[in-house]
Length: 201
Image (cartoon, rainbow, N blue to C red):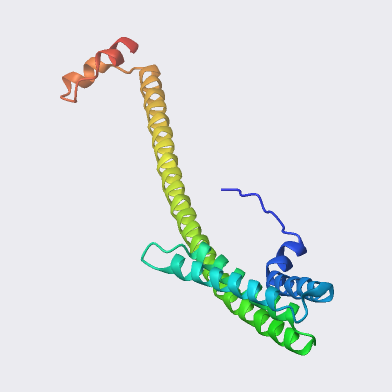
């Protein structure tokens, strides 16, 4: 019933939200470094990046086909395809306007895809918490009912013991009264006393 409460660090809350922007920014920075080191207007490098991007996109398309398509592989392949395309354009271009525009579009697209995943995870978390709460309430109700039953049985046993003690006390007191004669009661037509009561008398 008592669960440990774990307080997450503020970085643990921020990191998933900042991951798409960090990923696209890292790709842009690496592409511009590559641009400064000879990739600018390099047709061979552009063709290579285009081929890699198309290959990653094709891999994502194949991974998504059929009822048994793997969502993780598909998402990874499409993300790699976009990253390679952004890297190729940012590395090939001589200005910053097109790379920054592509970075902005890639970041918006990444947040759009991530938002769907976050909503799904939040929905699953809420469903799990509700299910856990219902189960806890059911167990608590069962425990309360069992406790009430046990308490009622204990009280019934106590009442039976108290009644037996009072009856025994009354019989002993009656037998100790002066002039008490159980035989006279029997002759008068009253119910016969048990043998134990006659012995006590």
